[in-house]
Image 1: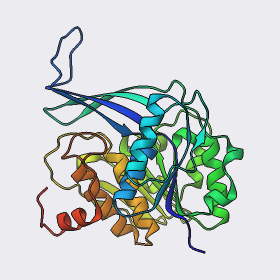
Image 2: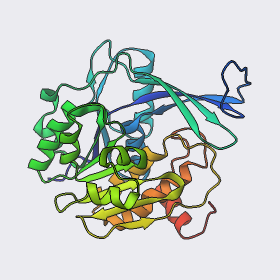
Image 3: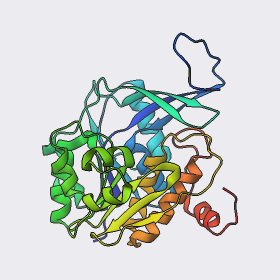
Image 4: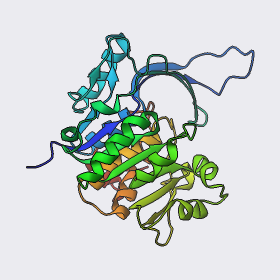
Amino acid sequence: MSPRWDVLGLGAVAVDDLLYVDQHPLPNAKMLIRGQQRQGGGLAGTALVAAARLGAKAAYCGVLGDDELSRFTLQELEREGVDCTPTLHKPDARPVHSIVIVDLSTGSRSILYSSAGVTEPEPAKIRPELVASCRVLFVDHTVIGAGLRAIELAHAHGIPVVGDIESEADPRLPDLMQGIDHLILGIELAGRVTGASEPVAMVRALSGLDRACCVVTAGERGCWYSERGSQVCHVPAFSVQVVDTTGCGDVFHGAYAACIARAEGVDRAIQIATAAAGMKATQPGGRSGIPNLPAIQRFLHGEIGP
């Protein structure tokens, strides 16, 4: 029997209120807001939307409630084709709520967020039949207890795990990282975790025969990766006109997971993920600029400009 989903995601979903300004505000300053909009966000949420836009059957398992932010989150995910039937309900649960200040002069952003009401699924709620229904499991660092349970079940069924780690605060993080088959870290966190100063050394420290792939991403510098502890390869970022970097890392993860679910090789997954993240950066918001697969293919063939 074929799996129900290509990518099943556990982790953070968010509602992002984006504010666009000419430059990041200084202390005690007043500044005109040039534009504002609300979009869905979050590590897992945006990764799943990216996977869905690339043609993957994606599903989300998390805990949401009855509030406006929860309803908005579900509506946005379902509008993108993400199956939310595995989502668990708790009346006072809610997604992360973020205020994202975007500097129009550089495309960089600052994120102010509240995690009040954010609720992790209970590990016991992660059932074997749920995890067995996907080709790829996606987890992030916000659901370590549930993530560890899901990883255990995924490995029991031979299902690869793609992980997005952006914080090392939880003491259980090493256990979570150890179970991730395709580990993708930003360069700052990779440096803190490994103590290395150069991306090649970071990748070597995090790679090994038991890990399908380790990737260290560095924005406009591109990324470095190694399969099964082999030679470290560098893939440069595409030169694009950056408007907003919100969600670029999440898009990279989701595009990568979609490719792995299609049984494509790591080299191809890295290429697609790099293109998807670069194309997203040319549009405002964390999700509005996520490309579909035909657009990425045209981009890679030079049929549409960066």
